[in-house]
Structures are given as structure tokens and as C-alpha cells.
Length: 251
Image 1 (cartoon, one colour):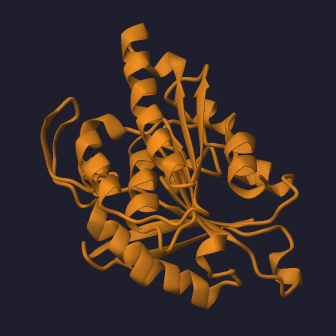
Image 2 (image 1 turned 180 degrees about the horizontal axis):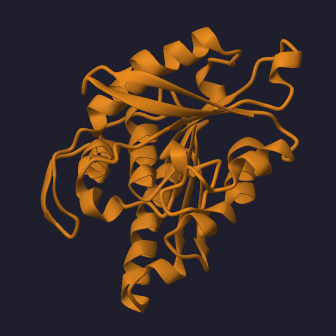
Image 3 (image 1 turned 60 degrees about the vertical axis):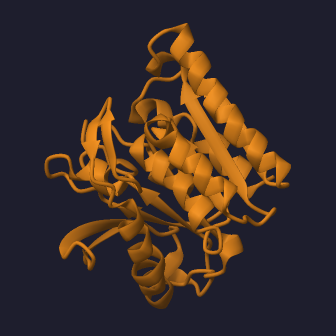
């Protein structure tokens, strides 16, 4: 089932909608559940809520998955370029997406210090790091990768689909070099062949993903790269639901 509620993101003093998935029998038992925090929550469950009229279909998938979760979907800021600003942890200039203010660290500090405690207090979660994951696509995928590196004491699993990491790859690489991560971390990385601009672009994406794969596996972290046939859209990411969930939670 899907519930929605509005909450204040205190560092921005803005109200934001949370799209919450609860297992079908949540209110009929007292079981506790692992949690995935995911970006662009409006695009996860219902086509009518999705920006382009197509969601990830996560509700239908999870209803039949056989393992129960709570999914906390954080809706993005739809005003102007604020999604880019909030979903990037670094201030950037001159990127192919233009200048970015970089409010992602403030957003994630709020998630771990305010949103997560709120969810753990009001819902039957398993609050421990081992049962907490993060996920997203595009800029949300970038934030998921940043989060699993920078906030590894809170999250043990990350689904990073079609991540826009090239715009700040050097900052992320520096972040990884100076950060300790637990070897029980699992990271899923993917990209679609039909979202690149030719073979050279695809090769550069693969090279970048391979860098993070290598750095993670050196630390004993389980990492998976999945080069799909998909495009940069929700219909393609829906096809990965089974793959990333199995890798993060069943292997």
C-alpha cells in the first residue's frame, strides 16, 4: 500500500511529499521491515504521480516479490533547477547541465538526522544499518552513490541506476579515497546503452563505472555493474527492479 505525507526539509524550510510503500499486510501484524530510502519518490509507484506519466512500477513488483520492505520515496523539488541543486552534493560550474549549487549534503544530513529517525519512530522498521538501503536514478543515482560512500555508517546497500556521476566524478573519487567503508556494503551500478551518445560515450561510462567497481572490490565490497539495453527513463528502470533488489538483498 502507498501512503503519502508532507514533511519539512528543515535546512531548506520547504515542505516535501514523502511517498511511502508499506507491505500489504503491514497493519495486520507486528512484523518489522528493512527500509530503502529512494529519490524521486513520485516516480516510483504510481503512473499518475510520475513526472512523465510512467513510474518504476515498484508497488506491483514489491507486492509479489516475496520479501517485504518499507520504501521511503522522497519527492524532488520541482521548482526550476532545484532538483539538480538538491540532488548534487557539490557546487559545480560549467557542466553540461549548467551551474549547480550543490545542496545534496544538506539534504542527506536531513535524511539521516531527521527523516530516518522520524520513519523509525513512526513505522515498524528494522533501524540498523544492515537493513537500510538507498537508491535512485539519474541525479538520484548520483546521490545514492554519494550517500553509500559518505554516509556508510547509516546505509549498507545502494542501487545507483543511470547515475549522473560524470559531472562530479573527480569529487566523488576524492570522497572515496578519504572515506572508510564497511566491507559488508553492496553497490549496484547500471547504465543503458540507449541513453549514451554513441560508442565512445558508452565506453567512457563503462570506464567510470569500472573505476568505482575496482575501488569497491579492493575494499571487499560487493559491487555489480549492469550495462542494460535501456534508455534514460522510468520504463527502463522498471525492468531493473528484480535485478538490483536481488543483488542487494538476496545474494
